[in-house]
Image (tube, rainbow, N blue to C red; front, side):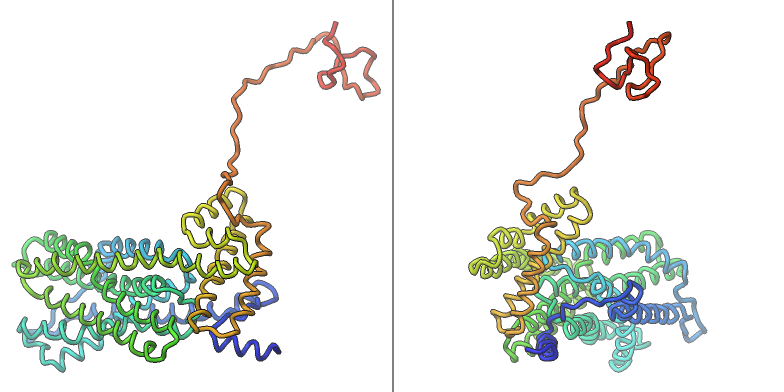
Length: 462
């Protein structure tokens, strides 16, 4: 097979070319397409956040004139109250993405998309939908809840999940499990909730400080922070998880019907849950409390249990698929066992770290190569990747064999290479006669019979 045909087959299956750019480091950095993706999307996120800041800080027009809107001080205080919830979700999702972690760029794309692009698009579309439903300016709370229940869920779930479709189109080969989709979708939802919480908190800060009859401003702010930042913080990540699961099911299947229906079913499930959530949130607290304990929390526990099962199932899948290469003699049996158990992978990395930076990097590369090999075999069994995957599999096996001499492939039976601290012994001072001169033995000026503390053949001075 010629190089042109092989490259075409790889591109059609989404398999990376496997060739590294040559030349100096500066040239490789500039010619890396992911650098420009990062710069372009970062500029887009900054523009969207700047536009939202300009819109939310404009004075609000009222029949008698205008009133002050949010200001920089309120937004800064609101951001300080909203960031702990965002930090919790980031740590949780990055901890889940353990078998085949995505590029940090994809984490940034998903998080920034939800925090900037999704919120900006939802703000525009929700405002237009509210005006079409006739709720703008009428002051009726029943009609005001209509947009939050019937239009906002579909708009927000579509904007949050759109980044998943973009990533799937660009690198569908790297979306290997439902856990991967949950992580990317959850980061997008966490970013959306972060920006939304800042807006809600800032509005409460400004309104309670301007209206005398609003009550205690600190108590009102603490109540909404407790509600949105703690009790209902799982809302947006839970909804987007449904769409993410549908997207990954579509990517990891050979059926064209499932590829169309799975994302649609996930999106409709997310919108339906969002509608129910907004409906009960618009009701009085006494009436919505039972829905929180008997509907929301059981659903959250069910999704958490499902994701946990998927996480352990990924380990079994890796062990099963790598066992195919073990049976033909291309890999030792220990590779399938270590690559399919996350605690052995962590232990191998910890042991390698004590042997030096080179061993640690080689161990991480070895684990990533084995993980990609296992998921590649799974894709070939499912019919997602054709015979072009055989050539990539041989490249990965060669890479594993090349790293085996430096990396820690099996940490069982290996101890941490920590420096040993010997028993403290006081240093003894050696007495030397001050009256008798001495010189080194090898010195030509040393007299016969002179004492040298270096050579043990000479005794103490007489």
